[in-house]
Image 1 (cartoon, helix red, strand yellow):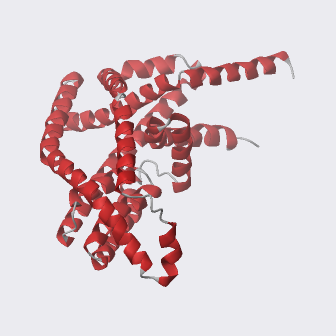
Image 2 (image 1 turned 135 degrees about the vertical axis):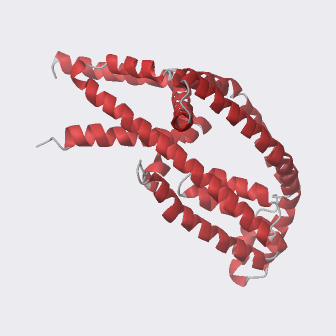
Image 3 (image 1 turned 90 degrees about the vertical axis):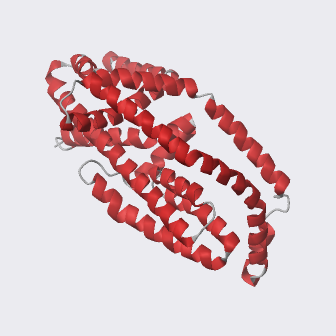
Length: 333
């Protein structure tokens, strides 16, 4: 190994250590990029309808988002708070119901015995207090959210200057490719965000309507959980189904089967029709890649890493396809 190779290895090691030490700064910065891309998509849609300056379009978009947020808050949050309180009172009843069903089936007696007797109301309350503590810890991230919001607004106001800065620090012969790569990353990330938002909103509305028609208790809370977990491929929709199934079981096993059929239909519509249709022009993540990215970043960075795993994977997948595969592997003879 010559001195140049040794120097390159040491530089890579030091760079990796520096990135690890600055991981929270990079996390906030990438979160700001994701949010700025979302704002940029809305701004471009608005400017395609009305020819107005970018800064004025940003003000209009932020104002519309604020008004929409206040409307949704007033419409949904009071009912959600009521349903969350009701859910806390239904959990012990659900546990008793499950035990009675398991005990009536000879093949499931072993499973019924595996449910610990200590899982009583006091234990559930203990777990609830831990969940509240976790929520209190998440509330301490308010400063990070404020920083992400401010950075995203600054990035959205003048994206070309930041783009020029990134291109200018690259070698001259690579600047054209870097410019194309930034365009493709922006298209992929914006398309993925728009597609997943439309998909999650559609699942939320359809689930809410379906559960309301079936007269399932806590329909709004269950639909909101199902909609939010649509952003988590593979395990998200399946996990979200457990809440409406458990609530429907309190009413009757027949209602639980109806809810299960409803969720299976909606999951297949989302997985095989809605999401592929919305993402066919941008980038579609393989379930295995998405799951591994979420597990890896979740274990390294906790909840923030879990939240940014998918948009970061979208960007990395574009970079791998356009740089590693096209410019390196395909040229390797």
